[in-house]
Length: 345
View (tube, helix red, strand yellow):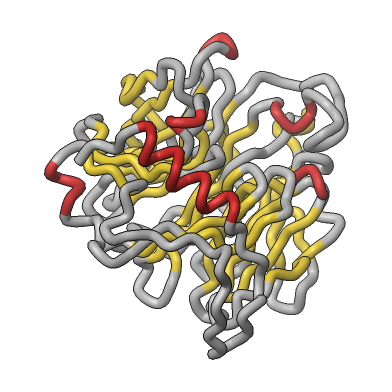
């Protein structure tokens, strides 16, 4: 199915005009709002580029704008046991909370040290990358914060960006300089060392560099069987690419780097993988490109979810891990799809 430019602009314009303020309707209350956009099914903004994507699109599901009013929303992580999403609003120096049951949006933590990426460990605790403190932390069950790592071989990290946790409890995170290039998403400072990707064993406290050379590492995700890792990078700080690495047999290094995708004039950021191995990737550049693109494990683009704002990151949530929750420039979006995320966050 192809989306005409006129249909695309009409649909995205309707969403922008009908911005949904969080919690207006209240739990269990149905209200009529004449300004709210009416979306005909199937939603034309969900574009099928290959038959392989058709089975993931639900006929009677549409893109929802759940909340707005942020400056740069990032790092969504789903807490299924509490039915809520946490995500970073980096320039506002806070972590936000969206509740699925009520639609309520509130501040979870402020200041957040300009937090960016978030995930959960296998014990359900929040793991966070912080730009301003240049560290990775864990929020304990009682709300206290434990510093997991803030330096490598005596040198401070640049600005930890995105983070994932492997099934062996190891914590993997990227460390580009984006959070210290200016004062908008942290505090302007000079990098202390080269960009890299790290692995932390929280049991032994062993911290290792898992790649020898990479520029501008950003989003990262394991394949469903954890035999491969996908990483967004920015060679020579030019256009972005996605690399795919093999994970070593001992699970401690990344080897055999290959180019999975050249983003061209597009801009990949954070992403997650579904149970079938497809990459759901935050995307943006030109207005008609903004949203989420879906790549098959073979590197073919099979779908495109169009949104009026660039999408920085996303995760799978909801009761069945089929609700795609997307953080954009200023807003939080949602779309229910017919496939589950490979991990809980």
